[in-house]
Image (cartoon, rainbow, N blue to C red; front, side, top):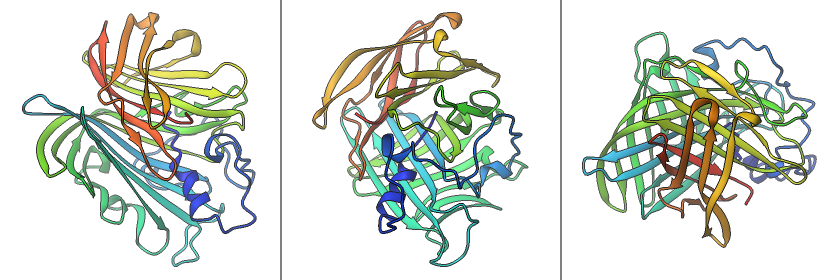
Length: 357
């Protein structure tokens, strides 16, 4: 589902001096009413490459990459790169410090024994962060997700880079597979009350390049997953956080699942089954059995780091476990995100994000 907390966080952190700002409701304020912004409704027709760029009128948006990688010795790593856009008003972008858009970047690397994470903040309109389409470039400071493609779709070949204290990476991402519309033709519902986002993915990227952890450099390759999502109010005030899974199966199929936890009532559970050619099937709560198998003490709280996932209609019965249970994003608003391993009916790798614990 790729709801990402950061966009709303910068509205609170950088825009906190605005006394008219609404009081947070739900996790990270994601349940705040957004009547002034453009609503998310079913039936939208997506258009590429235009939808790779920003969407005026919507309050929240992100460009999000995760990658499962190995070096030549078979050592496993995970990489995360995210750019969040948060609009303080529903007006169009403008140049200069009067711009009402805030930007946040998150970057992380994970190995079996080490996890590093960093964040960057910027105001829009002054060249410190943004997203352009011609050529495609999403950036904040010196962190970039930029097109290297020459064809009609600028996101078929990308260069991904970030660097901070203790880590850095440069990766090349390539794919010739189609974009995947999540949910119901890109309408991704988050609650029984109808909160939703527009959501599409490229789960078929092949990744290669180098990463550095604590001065040690590794040549790596593997799978990467890009999520694009935008909304104005994706959650209800009753929803306290989520558990999100993106899974690369060795069979060539992909699975996206999310569970929206609530203060009262059962979690909202849904997902998408993606076959090896990119065709999708919406998964509803009755299609999925998601169970916590084991937890670990992480950053002073109990985190579910081993899960059982069963999708009987697809003969999937797997256990996923964290490569590094301590993949805690110790940022301004913390959360857990890191690579996972798959065992059981299907092998593979993936990523897990957990918020609100």
